[in-house]
Image (cartoon, rainbow, N blue to C red):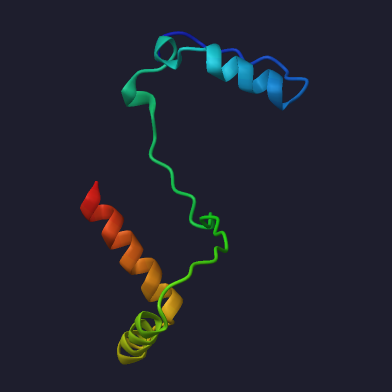
Length: 88
């Protein structure tokens, strides 16, 4: 650790946000000071969307999902995720 970081009392979230945006943490911490953490109960937020696709395509997705025994919406999400991964 380089030097001690003193945190002020924040009046509100905006004040805290401003503080963290202005500070350079590399002046206070070395990479060896960091610890890996996990948040096992943190769930990614989901949002409902509406999408129009041809009926035959939806039927094929439902059939495929039924074959592998998963919900068809989960299969659609997996297909989207794979498509995004390939394009990046």
